[in-house]
Length: 483
Length: 104
Image: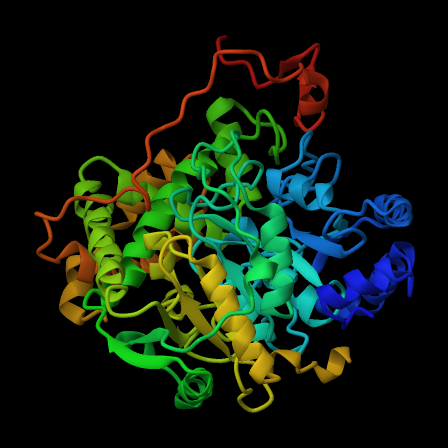
């Protein structure tokens, strides 16, 4: 039953084909069987999950079950969970137990979803491979020698391996879309401000956005609806009604203009381009029209993104001082020594690299040349999208320039890893919504196509992805190792 | 992509990396310092396309949306959770966070 859609699971639970307890037990059994191989979850929460499952069964019996009642899910381990370890994949927070829930986890629970665990990730969400975490490498369910993508690799692997039908994740420069592509699932990063970030541990605050992962766009629509909405606890949360995403999946593509951003189709593996072209052809069959769009400043996106993200990360991660929470070094000789060694020991190399470059880009004498310049380039990149959306309703591109790469392949070359984020980072700079949906596979590995829309076009993006998924079966492929 | 000339312009000495580590309150040993220096040079060469772009007349964009900072009423909204919050502290006693002696 873990391979069934959320719509089907909702029916199954309401028709008493199985109970929430049976569904949660199936999920826990699946985790037991798969997690040793995949390392997708850092924490599993069977006791609280079964208590919640029994409560869900009572609500189902009483006929007042909320939307996601009884559906198991995992949260990426950078969402705070009251009383449950929240590590951000870091030694720094290896013992951190929050005293409060993130709005996302609270909203998911109030809609009836049941947390069965916390998903592994690159440390502090910094990485594109889920190799940079204190709790070890996450493996791709399609090929255990390959990465699941990152930084939300644990969330993506958990869904792809059918441990859970749904997962939350976060996306600062592609951390939902790229692992969704690598693991053959659907993943959406909504518009900046759509989902509250209260209790989502900060990486780069002007770019971070919470989002959703599931097998299909329809499944994602349910979770997105449940966790979206205004939150007075997040000053960047937008006061705007949440649409009924699952109810708006039935739409016509006739007359819809889909832009193909030229630079996004260059410099990638040709088989990947062919796979996403097949998605474009399918959209044309459904009535859409393709138009080529220019993105004249696209080549600046990776540089701009890494300057801004690292500057913001150096500022955000300054809160880890070894005093109030987090790792503290042994026998500090004075306060400076306590700060320096606690941080030197608590952060992995990749996090340190980013803090250092960010500190440099913000330091006296360099800030205008680096951070200041990046903020100007950011405007140009954002304006490119505004101009492009005058000629199209949404855009389609490959999510990543290749399918999942081998574990270790790019680990020694951080810059090569950064460059592979070329098609996802600009969306965060502009704050736009985007999703990745599976295309035809390349050599047995999943490939994703990225749909990008104007601000708050989540409904349209999900509708188009849903229509594409209704017409094809690319999103229904199941990894053999996890079958 | 980075060219040799850009890489040269982005040359960063070990002392700058050491100073940056000090600013960032990060203890970095000599071996890592050298590897971070090499990374700095490559990264700064990579971003030369932005740092050298003639865009000084473009209005900087700090945030994806033009938003005003929202204010809330000045009212107590949370209960005291000191004990629960301090449970995650590396060293706390009697409601205080303990650190090494600062004033001798």
